[in-house]
Length: 135
Image (cartoon, rainbow, N blue to C red):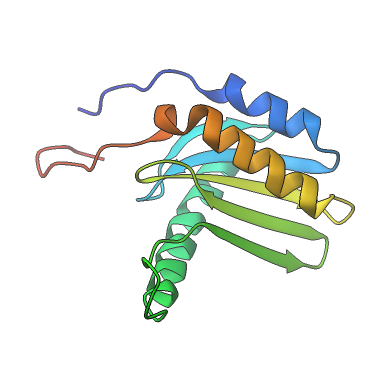
């Protein structure tokens, strides 16, 4: 049985309400499990968390191609019709994801995401799963 995590959703409210045009804020584990959310339904957050797990894995694989890098993904930004997607490392095996509309201030978003990660990164870390744990 998986141990229940403390509700972290409230920690995301400041980011969501402090940056205009933010739609969804999600914290996920490296294996794609939603840990916290703000501004979205649980089913939507679960779908986004699962997609983010694949994206962060892909980004890490690309990162290994830099000979002097550490291979760790720090930030991925995707611009698409309708808005932006941000994915940032947020502690050991944890990530912060944000969906925002087209009018979002990219500089402010990056700054606020970094500030949030710095403030609460240790609370967002997820331990690796042991073979005895069930998803």
